[in-house]
Image (cartoon, rainbow, N blue to C red; front, side, top):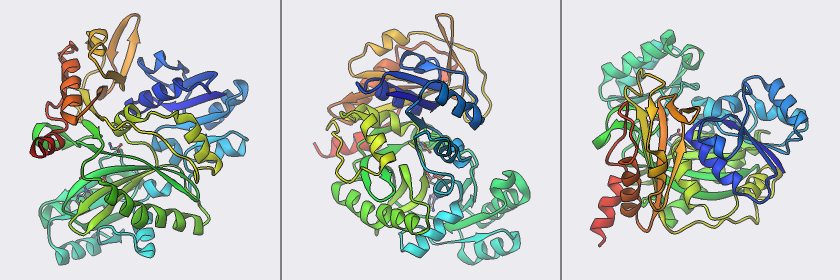
Length: 427
Ligand code: AMP
Ligand code: GLY
């Protein structure tokens, strides 16, 4: 079959690597892709925001399946537009993508369905929001309702900080995404990313991972899209996964179906594992980045039939095989990220790095300039390894990082610290 993948990040390179390995695939394109994806797919310069152009490409090239990587095209309704043109696409419709594109929508759905999440209220009036904040006290969390490129959340340590966040958001700091804000209780516990494939009725749990959101070692510095991840997540025991399915995922699918907007695609639950059990922090309607890089390393089965089963409502009797080994990925980013950074610096040593046992290097913001690889984004490389333990995967990933010569880049040196400490304790 012919497949078109949309996106250009490390997540998409990991998906492309897995899809390209499927014996079902005849032709495989990625738009727009990156220098690494170009080894697995034919990269095409389509504007993903131009749905008409994507549809025309699919028709010309007899594309059987479109796999959508990022949230923006989903929230813009690309799956609806492709479906209307008779083209199968993996991902939720625009209405179902509201689980990510409106935090207020998701919170209300949780409240109605009894799904455990932080206590909250929704506000479009700054004075009312501030009165609520003062009544609740700090710490407290302020979120822009809409998509804000991962920057729409302020975990405020003081009432003053929370009030300032309200003024910034409701004052237009995030444009339309911040016309409404959610103010919620600050949850305490350990975070985990949990992924399930959904076909509208049924859900198939994939695997869990842990992300490292802060830019610098020791979980210091500003929040980022994610500086590294590992899977499995020790906090997500079988019992915790079961509870998450029963208390959070399945009630969500039932509620979405009852609203007439059944959810299909991958659902990414950002969880806080609290003393009372799993609570939903947020949903994303796409694969995680960099979590997908470690998930794909551990997935033994062919991904393509699973994506098709999600599209076709056939997940009920579906199963996937996972490696018992651990996978870990280290993000190499351009100096300055998540703030301003320069593009165009030269990256060397990638071939030597990829020779370290168990290592795959997934590209994010890179571009090929002849035989030279240049940085072309904030998060640039995902140096990913599999191993018998998180410690072994970590050792291999950093051995590969140390072979990469890129003075303009940086990475955290402590990815996986929590799991490695647990492994030491249990020995
Ligand atoms: P989000 O963009 O919703 O994933 O939020 C970004 C980060 O903010 C999360 O990964 C958490 O670390 C933190 N966060 C969001 N909501 C809460 C909450 N209610 N309590 C504690 N931390 C939170
Ligand atoms: N790594 C978190 C995300 O993809 O949103």
